Length: 214
Image (spheres, rainbow, N blue to C red):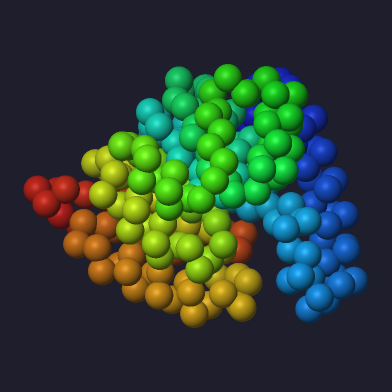
């Protein structure tokens, strides 16, 4: 893989093994999986992780925000890239047991020093932080995408990036995603593109009034 930290690779391999086991169990459960969805890793996947990692290396943001730590799979990619460019990651998650797992894994990867863990309601946590945010990963429950966009947008730096995951799949969240994308594209100084990578990731870049959309 692409990790700069020598200790990140074995942590990534543990995540991949868990993801494979989770995928098999989800297939067995079928529709019943929704009742226990918090038990599963639900990772962005290595392709999206590598894309996020490359974007941070290329753009060299100062502050990276992750909305939805979950068990820390994507946090590993963000933190490794952030450490390489001297940035910090702030990751927010409602479930304390998920974030505790992520903390332990990031510590094993030698990356805990660049990650600030915030546990609680995302909108309350966002309101408490003045920003600015230079790079944002939005990977939270899809009904929260729109309110989180409205909370993050005023604090997004010039040429800041929002990366929104799960824009194509799963299909059950299509209505929430459509409302989110309509609001995203209505912003006068955001330029967005949907990439068919993983479950679909939309990249949005903020431009000032003097630097209009292309």
